Amino acid sequence: MVFSSHIFLYYFLPLALLLYYLAPRRGKHLVLTLLSYVFYGWANPYFVLLMLASTVIDYICGLFISQQWGRAWSEPVQTLKATARHTPAQKTALVVSICSNLALLGFFKYFNFAMENYDSLLTLVGLGSFKLDIWFKITLPLGISFYTFQSMSYSIDVYRGKARAIKNFTDFSCYVAMFPQLVAGPIIRFQEIAKQLQDRRHTLEKFARGVSFLCLGLGKKILLANPCGKIADMVFDATAPPALDAWYGVTAYAFQIYFDFSGYSDMAIGLGLMFGFVFPKNFDSPYLSMSITELWRRWHLSLSTWLRDYLYLPLGGNRLGEVRTYLNLAAVMLLGGLWHGAAWNFVIWGAIHGAMLGAERALGKDSPYTRLPRSLKIAITFVIVLVTWVFFRSPDLASSLAYLESMSGLANGAGGNALIGGVIYKPYYLLTFLLATIIIWGAPQTWDFTRRITWAKVGWIIVVTLLSAAVLTTQAYNPFIYFMF
Image (cartoon, rainbow, N blue to C red; front, side, top):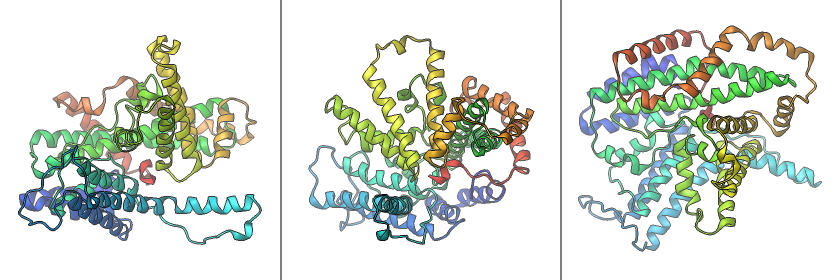
């Protein structure tokens, strides 16, 4: 089930809100948890068992880490001191939590990738007779990359003394399974929502802002991301498109992935507000960045800060010298690329971003680049991002290199590719492309736009909603891109 579907918007969401607000205060989390399991298990009910297993393991590990296991249930749970020495049982519980989550993620996300590369390597060195040739394929559960990171952060935060362990299993299950952000983020850390699980306010103002987020996010997805995605699909599926078409196609993909993912994040934040929760911002106008370093302070903030706090800093950050800093940056971005997908293209995408982060750090703040006009720095950064998106979008390395060749104008275009222009340059697609450009570089963010709802803004939101609803009836099924990750 996706947010931009009739069944969610017209049936599931109204029913969920009705049941939630009719439930007594102590029963709201149970209702929300059960609704979330229905939402998650809609495509495949067996996936619910994986999420439940991760939830149970981390819940028990949290009790062990907080030294609550075996104590009287009436005793209050104390937050661990950050400077306290941990017992062997606490350390073991943390290891169990991390390893179990990584094992789930590793098996379901990377098993097929590992087996394919293992067989390819044996064939390459002349040992093809030892190939495994496994006939079955592991299906990737939706959202496993998100909820494992989220659940794992709970144990780590409790261990570090940044959060207090939670006694109520239903409350913890609600945190892990909450459907607004379950399958594509934002990655909500427990310390960000712990107090809200205990007590939060449900106000008309909060609900209205949530509806605004939901409607504007739906507009991003239906009116902008989907048409841009069709442009990108046609160009990337072509054989050696002309240079102009290639640049047009990859720019359309850059627009698609931004509006698709930021639109989902807006809808998730809006749904959270409608149920009384305040989720953190996940995008901050990333294509206004003047460097790749700044880009990662603006793009998918919940992931970039998660990687910083739970991977980069524990590796030593920038505290262990220049060489170690560069190695840490490279390692984090390589793993960040691999987190997005089990393919070498994602590793290359992460490697390029890691190399750019290292290069920008080496050049420092006094390099000639920093003295360029702001608009030029934004343009240069965006071009670099477009090149990296080629690897992210293409199915394999050969396709990526061929597309880059087309962008450079060196490819020998196929005769039939001239027909693509008759489709991708239709007024509808050009208008959508122009509108996307204006919104990305000239319009306020949804986060800022909805801070204060005026009647004029209500008018805009109604127009966007009606257009989205009308177009939704004609568009084919088109899931969010990050559902694949």
